[in-house]
Image 1: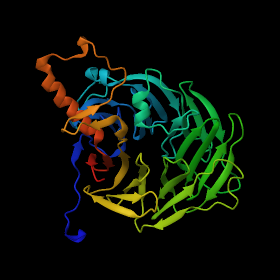
Image 2: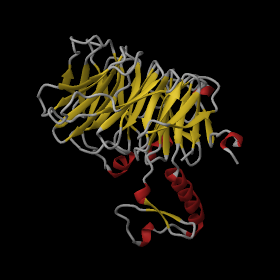
Image 3: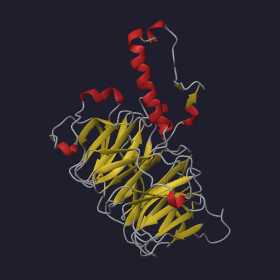
Image 4: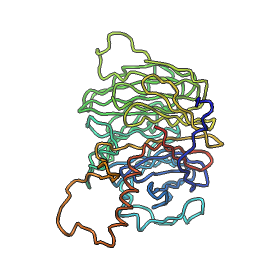
Amino acid sequence: MSSELLPPLQPVFVLRGHSVQVHAVHFTSGNTRLLTGDADGWIVSWNLALKRPVAVWKAHETAVLSIGSWGPDRIITHGRDSRLAVWHLGIENEGGMAKMLPVDKPSITSPHPWLLHILTVNTLNFCSFAMCLDGIPQPYTAHMAIKAKSHPPPILIAVPNTIDSGGIDIYQLPAETRAAVIHADRNITTGMVMALAIQAESSRLQVAAGYESGHTMVFVQSDPGAQFQRLYSARPHSQPVLSMAILPSGDSYVTSAADAVVAKHPLPAMQGVWKTELKPFKLVQTKHSGQQGLQVRCDGKIFATAGWDSRVRVYSAKTLKELAVLKWHKVGCYTTAFADVLESEITNTGDGVVEMEEENAEDDDESIPAKGSLAVSTVQQRRDAKAQMTHWLAVGSKDGKVSLWDIY
């Protein structure tokens, strides 16, 4: 059967819980939970095995810009109310949380998770925060979130500068201190910072930024306290940069913008490594303007964008070739997220039984469930394992719905 005769791809499931547009989606707790945030400031935590809400609260007075996770039970939300908040919400705490969805108009006084940290940041740019572990080479992934214990390692948060909208502030948590400032380049007219990405390796810190002018730049700090050096600057876009993401390899990043260009760039680590003037690795004119919410899958093979034209497009991270177009929503899409599948920790015994590796497992009698509860426990474990093994792609849209896709 030719590809022209194949039926269009359809989402596996659609989560209907928000009454306004969904601006942020994020997988957490080893892909057993999906966090969604909307234009009214509501956050919903969904159980992916059951496709049901397990926690609902109003995190911000205005729109949620982005959501992240820090360790197994800390959720970061970034709102248009100039607040970046860190909440404590583990799976064991969900019992005391409200379950009524925003579409059902719950009380704004419903229970909130414990608020651990709050930062006052600049949100006039509509720029989402970027984060990485402080001085750890690997990017922060769901794998590390599961392994982290009650005290996750420190992280760095990058946001637009409070005073200079073309500059960048970098904060450290849990200290809640401003660790560094990158001042706007006065030699280039860039306008506001529109998108950020950050990674740290030992003492070296790399920050990639996208600007209102269509420029993108990379700044590198060789040691804590040292001045940032601009090692890369290009203007691949004619319109404001809307989103960007660093590839897991750590040596390149991808940008999308209000124009129709998708671009892949080098991520230089230090001065002198590159012998010639740096240029974008690849530029692709997609003929589809307004692609945002760019996210790279954890294996670095593909990335996805959410389009103003209601389409979600999946690209090869190596060639930037368009691999799939997902159309289900009738209005514009704003955000995407890939599940971070822990394939190394999920094994199949060959007889259809899925086993999850667990740390500190004990063989004592107390760990063996009662016979009556064994079947229920097994069913729930299989549901959770299936949710964790699925390569979900979540899409948030202007229609208030979140579609879940399983395409590769």
